[in-house]
Picture 1 (tube, rainbow, N blue to C red):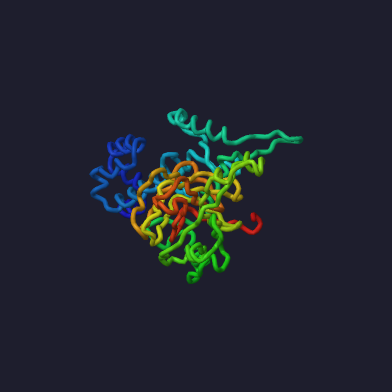
Picture 2 (picture 1 turned 60 degrees about the horizontal axis):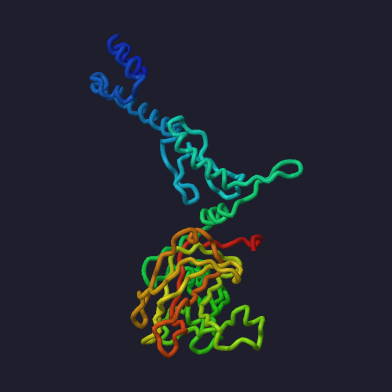
Length: 352
């Protein structure tokens, strides 16, 4: 009899212990396996205690696996509840919409499902239907692409930005000036010169004198009129432009600039813009009367937030919106260093 107790299951041991124990076990087994561990007989027998602990562990794992509230997992940079979220291939965006949920959670799930349904547009064709991708899902897919490399801002002048990352051949080699090896391109509103050197801007060295001069643009009406318009009516346009190349995209969430060694000419009003064709620009962050930079060689770093931070761009531009503090050259943009941070994505050769 004692030998049988060693090989029998914990339930059989409780049956042999007493009928009262059996009734108690049948009652608590429906409620929770954990309550069995507090039974005096379970405490007195180490074998039964170990078996019940293993049973409890298996029950908990089964409950967590089957319950939609059990656990959360990271899927494509998003925290997803497996029981309530499924991938939507119809949208072509890698997004998630709620699936079947318990009755208590249907009310909370309906708004998200309606929003996801509104983002997917179905176009009826000749023999069937094809799903068209909405614009707001396209940038969502870009951001959640598994091939994205996160370039995180740590401090002013660090080596975590996209310019340094491309210069190191995506972190695999020693740094080489990316402009010199034509891995990326930098332009200014004024022609290249000794003090407007794109290679020096990304060299990582402090530049005592580095600026972009203004380019005067006439309004469209005056250009059509020709000689009837006066030259004094032309408006200055000063900018620096950084092109990552056709195979690169960046979801910018932080950027850094540095003033050169000039004693004046501190920028106060400018805008960071992004574009994919260098023709149409979208404002990422605007600065109006920003007095953050007040000293020669001083860094300035700012986050980029809002909807624009979730869109990938190939090119970025710093455009001067108002005159600087320089009395002699108010439309000269002095810049010694420029770096961008965020989620970097390299397109495949077929995509380009």
